[in-house]
Structure formats: C-alpha cells, structure tokens
Length: 341
Image 1 (cartoon, helix red, strand yellow):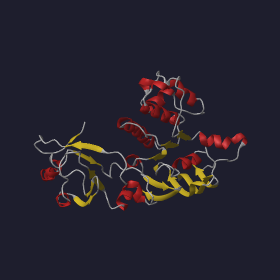
Image 2 (tube, rainbow, N blue to C red):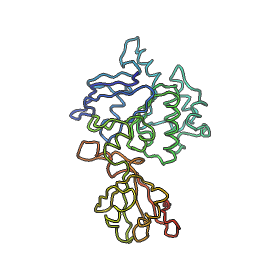
Image 3 (tube, rainbow, N blue to C red):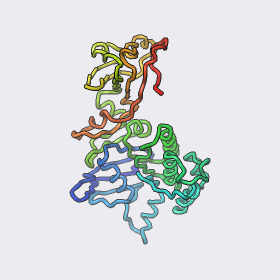
Image 4 (cartoon, rainbow, N blue to C red):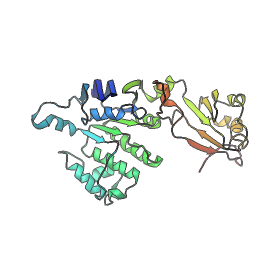
C-alpha cells in the first residue's frame, strides 16, 4: 500500500512554476527523502501533501484519503490530520512556555495522543521538561518541534529540513528519533540538503530541480550512477610545500583517477580508508612537505545538493557541502593522519 501518491502536481506563483507536473509514490513504512537546491520546489511539494497549500492541478492521496473529502464540517480532513505528524521548516514556539506545557498544548489538539512523559522520552528531553522554550539550544528546539509532530501517534511523519543548521551531535540525536519512529512502523517523508543524511535514513531519494524529479533511486544507486563511489578532495595550506604530481597520486593504492584543479585536487578512489597492510605506502600523502591540511570528503558519507546551471543529477554531487579537516602527524610511527582539533 502507498502511504503517499501524487500525480500531475502543479503549483504556480505568478509566473514562477514551483511544482511542474510532479509524480511521486511513497510506500507505507518507507523513509523517503526529497533533495535539491533552494527553490527546487521541495517545501512547496511537502506543504501541498500536508494540506497546507492548494495545488493548481494534480491529485494527492495520503493513507488512502484525499484532502477535501466528504463529511460535515471537514470531518474527513480532520480524521486525516489525526494520522499525520508535521514538522515545518521554521517552527515558532512560544518562548515563555515550558517544554512540558508546549507538548501539553499540542496534545490537546488530538483525540488520541502520547502522554507528555512518553513523547519527551521519545525525543530525550525529559531533563528539559521544566525549561522555557526560549532557553533551549537549537538542537533541543528542533527535537521539541519533532516531539510536537509525534504527539498524535502519527502513521505518516513530514519533516522539512529537520537538521539544517544543527551541530553534528544534535543531528545524530534527531536521526535516532527518526530511526525509532521507523522501527515502530511509521512512514517518513523528509526534505534535506544533506546527502549524508539521506544515505543514513532514507530507503529511496528523489532529487528535485525546477519543480520536477530529475533522479530517483536508493542512495547507493544514485552514487553508482555517477561512477564515483568515493571522491576525496585535498588542498594545501599556505607554505605547506608542493602539490604531489598527478603521477604520484595515481600510484597510491585505491586511486582510480586524479583531477587536478586550480585550488584543490580530486581523487576518485576505490576505498577512502586504505587496508592496514597498505598504509605504509600512503605516507607520501601525509608528509609535512606534501600536506599539512587535507580537506577530504567521501561521496559515500557526505554529499550535498548544490546549485549549477545544468539540470542533471550530477550537479547535486558537486563541490559544496560539509568537509572534514585533517592535519599530518609527522611524529606518528605509522605516518597516519590525526583529526584536526
């Protein structure tokens, strides 16, 4: 059974087409991700599905029901909303309410709901139940927003960029909340800019641009479609010495291709972490004369949607995104690198 089914979805704002004939199906129990640059139509699409925005054309079905169904006083729409959990891209909660009071307020909107204690336990905010919302950290506020979405025991959960702007620890905490909801049999539709997040959480991913889906598949399938399971980029800090020649880099274990650039070099590699027996041969990449600071990124763990002029899947796996910084540790007997502080 499909939890979400939409066909021919269209939404225009004056002369801007935000959603252009979108076709989408999400199976029950699936975690489905929508990725794309700002302005791709992700938020408009999710607001149409949530019943917050009327489409200009197209059909939407959620959990076997449609918005605007029959029933006195919108009873059918009310019944559908009872089955949904919604976390908006920007959630403004009352700063002077406590965490427990906020959950209690949202709980009052539903005929069936978790208790305050249950929902705070789901998002690990028990210790903050008496704290004012205005005193919470960014990550705690996001978890509270998700708690408000989970309070009704929803079957289908909408999350619009739930981890944007959060630190790594807060992101992992929210991921765990989503995983627990999935484990209980729930369906999730989330939008995100982070392919790392989609890879960790999603069964399938649709990449949107100009209101259309331009690529659809599992995260692994989308990576493989680019012919690059892993890409590592590195750049030298000022005064670090010469850049290793392409021939030197190509001779390293696992390196499949070398692409020199004006300010950094990209390596397509078979494995980001070399096998233990090969590490002694990789020391050239960690010598102080060769590299003091290496900026690395793996497509298998960290990609991000980025803007370009070409509407193709490849544009979203480009040079923007999170990066890990490594510095050489020349005193190490093995010559391996240590994470930069």
